[in-house]
Amino acid sequence: MELVQTCNDLYRESVDKGDDKTALSALTTAIRIYTERGENSNVLTRIEKAMTLAREQDDNFRLSLLYCYLGRAFMKAGFFNKARNAFDAGLKISSQVDSKDSEHLLKAQHYGGMAAFFENSNPTIGDRENTSFKDSMVYFAKKAYAEAKMISVKNAERPRWLGERARIVGSVLVATLDFGQGQKYLSEAENLLSGLNDKRFLIGLYRFKGLLIYNSPVDNRLERTLDLYNESFYFSEVYDIPQESYFIKDALASLYSEMRMPVQTRIFADETKRIKYEMDKADHESVPLAAKIELIPSKRPYYFVILIGAITCLISAAIIYYFITRKKTRYASAGAGNEDIAPMDVQPHTDHIKQLLQLAKEDEKSFYIVFKQIFPDFQNKLLSINNELSVADLELCAYLKLNLQTKEIAQYRKNTISSVDNRKSRLRKKLNLPSDINLYVWIDNI
Image (cartoon, rainbow, N blue to C red; front, side):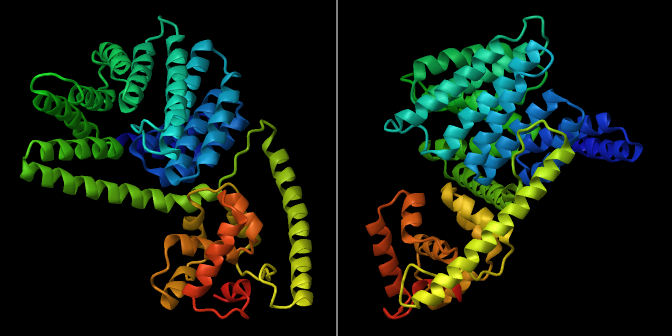
């Protein structure tokens, strides 16, 4: 943590002196460290300022790099559409950097992020039925590897970048049960990475080499797997990267359980739970920060962006006011008996409602988490009426609170209209509402 503190101190000193170039360098390094440590809130509270500095200085290299960090932060917060858009934006900017090596390095990172995108936003890898997801992961991991391979052999950083990309391809292949090809890439990665002073990259390498041995028909496979896992565990303790610590401790807990070593199993299982709780808590706390950040892919001057933003807000406010007024008029004339016509009388700021509607439209996993932040008492009030309401019931109530109609809910959730109607009927029964009570009106008063 000493380095990140030094970066933060240097950033503040540079701002005081008006040295924007040094400020950007220090801030970008701090964000990289926070990204590696999985400290999502620290990334998201700094990233917009860093990107503004990069745009003002026409520093396309750092701007592209920051989009990569932003994409990974969005993924951890559950905003997968935003994450993919960030990687795409960073890729476009990477073609504008000064050197070919820098371009290949940046593209390798963005393609690596896209491989992680498919791993995190879709069903668990290792399932033979998820062919399209596995293909997407392997495709982007190999594209990252191909970009790293194009870095000049004279570049001193090439072994690290190529070795890590080879490690990622090998890991993805092993995780998707292609052990033969996975071993080939992991061996290449070990040749490139084992001679480096920075041993962080060996944490994942030895873990997946252990997984490879575990799935191989060799003598003493459990003992040999344990040796490799212990190598990975050693380096995870040295570098203290929470996500890597979680993965290797989880793997050790499972292996010790299979080896019938209950004491070690319990120790590592408890450690895994502790780290997972802390990681989930940190990710959850970063959700509101991620929700507020909007991507600005344009390289236009900052004042131009502000001007366009102001005009857009004014137009949006006028449109929203018109539709709110129209909905209230429709409701007044139609009467409370019409189930699918509801008032739009919500207290939170209009921007919050727009944000929630966009999350609902994109079917983001973080929708209900953000909803609870904006309507903190909503869930508790519903559960006080019926504490057996499921998560699906609560999410449906959230859609109704936002005045989303049956057809819209069906479209966003990729359900049929009849299935949504059935869910609303079941919800009405759980809430013990008679048929003459308008569900939207009732929910709106919660």
